[in-house]
Length: 278
Image (cartoon, rainbow, N blue to C red; front, top):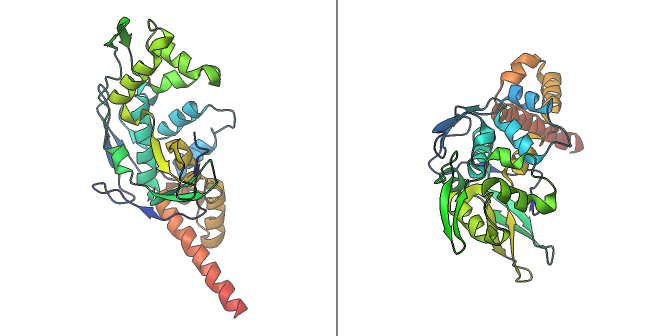
């Protein structure tokens, strides 16, 4: 899902309207019965915990659950039982509280390869609480009769089976009595009740005029930011060499404050290089 999305090496950060300042906790309402959660700014200890558990063969949904269990999220119970849309919203909230949200995303046209700069406002994701419910099923009337449907949760995605059959497996888990011909209707019902389950954008290419769409992958966006300076170990190494701070002190620093020092170091190095060449 993240192939359509690319980010520049340096991206400016902003805050959505109505949300707290960078470095402050965010409060996110979830679908019933999970109430609300507090998203604290990510720090070095959280990032180090994740770095020790991230593996290349870990399914995306399992990695997402790992991120939500790293210590930034307070309350809400087991994230594996949250609706898919609430998991997407929480990952976006982790990004906003810990690093800020990017002003823009970069999207490449699949037809002509033109790169587009698309403004990004995360508030429409953060503020969109699913109807739910998250834990129980409900009846859906179809032409073929009444079908019992349960909205998909994170645990349904951990091992979806073969990628080509993922949608079929998901439908079997969430609506076991439904026939395959009901798939589109039930997908529409899911999106109506959990609109952030799929974060799809429709665009028109300014270069060739073709219409195309893509899915925003909040996890890919967050991991890009976590790994931006080579990851937490690289950042600790750079700051320890420059300032001789202890690892324990650096791990306690919120990520956004650590990045301020890294940016200061980069600016200083640039000035010194320019002076040396002048």
